[in-house]
Length: 365
Ligand SMILES: *Cc1c(COP(=O)(O)O)cnc(C)c1O
Figure 1 (cartoon, rainbow, N blue to C red):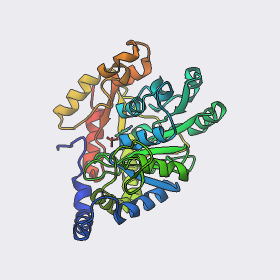
Figure 2 (cartoon, protein in one colour; figure 1 turned 180 degrees about the vertical axis):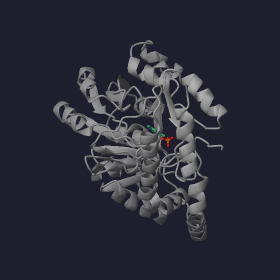
Figure 3 (cartoon, rainbow, N blue to C red; figure 1 turned 90 degrees about the vertical axis):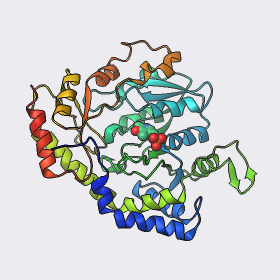
Figure 4 (cartoon, helix red, strand yellow; figure 1 turned 90 degrees about the horizontal axis):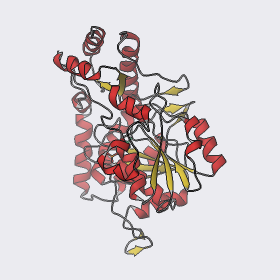
């Protein structure tokens, strides 16, 4: 058996006709930017996120940059981000001219530790960006409480968590705004780059839309020095074809994850911890192992694809050497970086494939 880390094939095969119909619809309509496909997807995705407004963007990074900018966050400001996340979270803060301030995660859930946020708040702090990493919702109640107490904005990074819920409420609906990525590998993926910002604030939505469209509120009228980062009609049409299948496909990921959670039993492997009050969407199934390199090689020798999320923590990346954070200063992020391994997880894994992964992982000595 040969099991890749990820495969889009089973999903693409199932949605083949719908995706081709989406292409035909756009091509026949001969309209490619800012049209009815974009509007239709935005409306249905806002509904999916239990939010009033959705603004399509060119990618997930911009879906985070635009609300930060729209909220007036920039030079001289600080934004709290988790130390364990994809680099885009920190880069969004950097791009608006503010400084990312890292808070360590809880090692069991991999997500930002709410009890460590307040000690990092200064008079420059303007916002908190919780990341629902690997598809597991953050502990949002204490985060929202801290934000309220210190008068901070909350911008959720939902790039890995489309449809995940915390205490029955879908992620992206807690903060002032949320950014989603539709990078092809995400739970809801386009056939190229795409993203969206969701919010319940009408003024904020308008500003985000203008900022992503050359700062223009209506044609050839520019109120901001904006950017060009829009969701194009083709990607919107593909996303509209996929969105109705989202809950079912997330449910399938949960089934695979639950098989892993109940089937994998090996003292050398630490399984991910799931809070009782969340429903995760398992963008990534992350395990930890002290001897990760050997586990990785062993799985590869047995034709099981894996990945690392992420092999170098952000504060150790060359591009962030200016922050002057030394090795050892964010030990939990470093520990996760050194021990985390992601097992195969994608819609359409067969029973035999799941069983095979479990068996091989259990036989690791
Ligand atoms: C993928 C991702 C992003 C960025 O999304 P892109 O569409 O690749 O720009 C941001 N944050 C997190 C946590 C991500 O995983």
